[in-house]
Image (cartoon, rainbow, N blue to C red; front, side, top):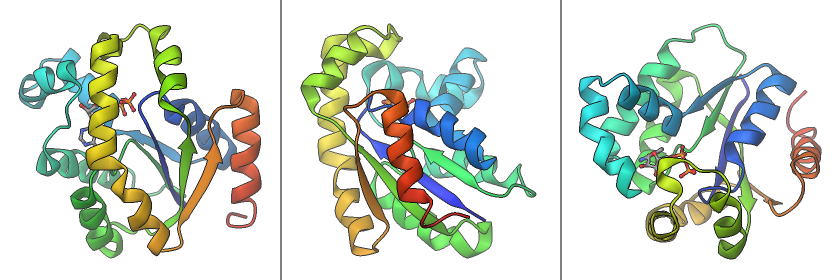
Length: 187
Ligand code: ADP
């Protein structure tokens, strides 16, 4: 199993690079953001619970997030690995993932940190047009990132899993940089 975490600020390009990794290494792409948006669109009971949280750019409570991730992993018993995109986003989530690694068979090979400045994020997301991409909401999401998600850099660095990649390059250049990092790790 090759499991990879793709990590970075909102708008760093996690989803785009996850799609690259998915086709390159034949992995299952799990985006917690996409899962929540699916539930919101389909007005499931989970969707109704999290609608206003996503609208405000806050984080969904850890318990719900861990549950949705775990359910999704369990759906794919035969995969050669997963790309976790947007998960974990808190130390609690990372610890939960670590505690379930054996049970779910998802040991992590690398955490790819797409590194990019806030100003570049603001420029990029202005053009994306998603509901939560309004400037004041982007600022909140960056604040949430700084307070709750950024501490994970230390968490994964301590475990020697962190690989930082310059996210302020073209999509292809970021993909090539990722490929160069992973070729040492993934056959
Ligand atoms: P972005 O990285 O651009 O913020 P995502 O699609 O990853 O986009 O996430 C969108 C929203 O979904 C987040 O702002 C948050 O409300 C919710 N979300 C996604 N992943 C998580 C997570 N791991 N923990 C808590 N909330 C999450």
